[in-house]
Image 1 (cartoon, rainbow, N blue to C red):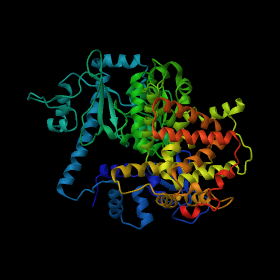
Image 2 (tube, one colour):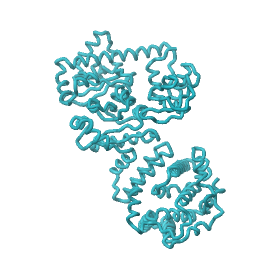
Image 3 (cartoon, rainbow, N blue to C red):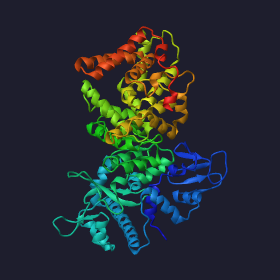
Image 4 (cartoon, rainbow, N blue to C red):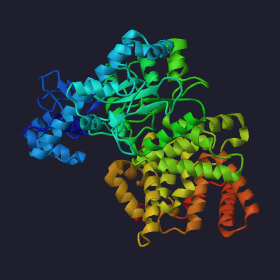
Length: 615
């Protein structure tokens, strides 16, 4: 059975090739591509490269797309491979019916109509009626080569396009299906969707025209108008210039997202060819997925005004549930009063790179700055709301380890940052922790804190901020992030389903099953010394709080001082039992540290350890 090219293209677009091949092949990023040892012949040195839309082995010559890979790797036939991939992608394989064949013929007919319309628009731009459009393009610095590269044109006055297409045998119904005509609400003949506008063909990944965008010349609204949704064109799934940018990105260009057609053209004209635009709307999930198939970390460029900040924040909120360790975004706010087109025309590619691209910030930093502007952080209520918004944003990340890292990074910024804290500690003698008789090293204290978290998942909301201020080794930081993420999720589930508890054993089983077995084993081991009794899940809450604060204070005395002061302020404002208990625990921990109480005091309650309770 012959399948429609449009369906196969959609199937390939919805199947990220590195993820598909990565199930069997250990892939490592190599520039814009991935590489690994070929699954089709034995080799020790990787010569198998995976690109966004195909793979190639320079050893044995194996080559193909997602369908070919499944056929080769799984030993499937063509239709069997297509069905397997379509099921995963949520697509239905077209049935060999007269209706399906008719639908595909209709799609091909629409594509032909749009190509013919694009040719009409381009020819009309060169005629006397296109003089205003040509003058506008000249004023924006668009070169003749760019005009031809992007297929720019001019929509003639109403009636002219219909006349030309009718003469070529195109019916009014077909023009309407292609998005060139729209029916009048009051009845009567349909009228042209575009008239008297500068025209920008919108193309798909293969370079086929699927719609148009038009800019009004002179007065009129809307200034920019995109064609309607059709069988070929879906705005949420389309990026302007994806066909040309795709080729540039495969050659190593920087992926850049801007807002407008002319921003794209000006940057491309200056040599920054990996640039796309989301057709005048906020970036959609589908557009982000398309971008990530081509580049792991695109740069989003937004105006520096309030509207630009709102657009950036919308894009970040859309992206957070989709990001992963191997794909993210960077945000590059533009200087006030500038857009990419004006900036690159006055400063050139080098100026744009230094003024915008070089100043692009990671996603977590952009999220923090943009959310901060929405809250009156000078008040306790404002700071509390700001922190809650940050944690909610981090919580939308599905990968638990990555979500934990975001919580740590955002809390670092909220509380002043680790580097600033360490700098203040070096500059202030009293900030250094007092260690009268350090029976344990810092690594052992960190181990005790993490073992306490594993033994008491309910402690996560109270200790998350403390952990964020510690400079943990990467493996322990990942374990802490995963444990906290599980605790948050379990707490939500508990609210919805009361019978389930925040159980230590369930948490540890989850961590062991998700790749943290060795780290959990090290944290809960009896060596180099037994764990204190308060680590055990059976320990009384007040003993757990006292133990945690004592060992945390040994690692970060300054943070303990800050917590005491904060709880004292809260208690003076609101007198309640939780505040009083917290204040007593903090004050006792601080007193013990100042007095130089040996760590053996915390150990005497259970040198027999608590590992048996936890495992």
